[in-house]
Image 1: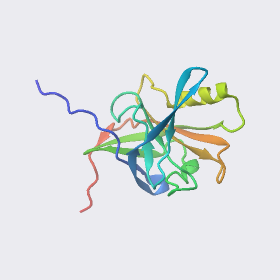
Image 2: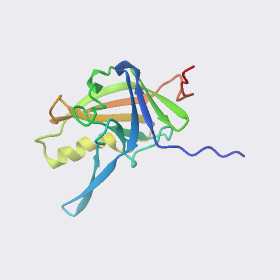
Image 3: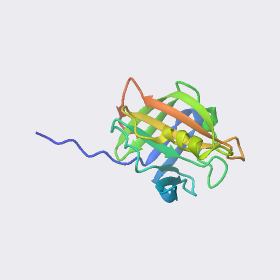
Amino acid sequence: APTAAPLLAPDRIEIPALELDAPVVEATEKSFIINKAVYKQWQVPDVFAAGWSKSSGKPGGGTNVVLFGHHTSNGAVFADLYRLEKGDRIIVHAGDKSYAYIVRQTTKVKERGVSFAQMVENASWILSTPEERLTLVTCWPPYESTYRLIVVARPAPDAEQEPPQVDP
């Protein structure tokens, strides 16, 4: 019996409603020890690219695929993320496969000036999930980092995988 091709890390994101087409790179992480527990913080790429959390899922893997991006600096890949609306389409490419997602929810959670317990609760948005979803994270509002803007998208009902679009 043929074996399924291994899932690949995301390497590009397209958001047609925002006219965004950007690379995705693997994000680095920093570890912190607080009260003898180790916590990891993903570092957003300092270039025009979304960062992929390697501890999150891969497209098509049936869990949470998490991408981070700056909103005002270092290319500001997610500068317009706040303009996304429910129903907008997001396409994530991984190798020669494309995965279509539909925005289902946008929310903001306060990050600055909150308790450590609240920060940990906020981080639940980027944890593994029992179903496929795409979670995009950036800061909010413009020129501040008081909140995290979180966009959750689910696989498009018409096609979880789409062939890559090739220009003629």
